[in-house]
Length: 52
Image (cartoon, rainbow, N blue to C red; front, side, top):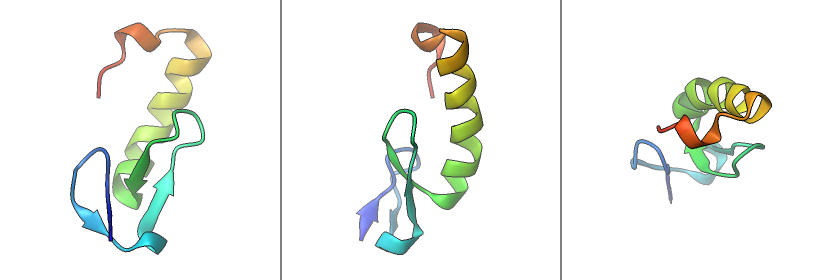
């Protein structure tokens, strides 16, 4: 079991994804919400203002 770095619940390894931008490991639900925001922030240079 692996802990999601965002919601902190535990999931089986096959249900964990890694954000290609920030490399955090998270469950599929958190991944779907996180990745578009993470990509936007990285593209627009607002990383210092982004807080999960």
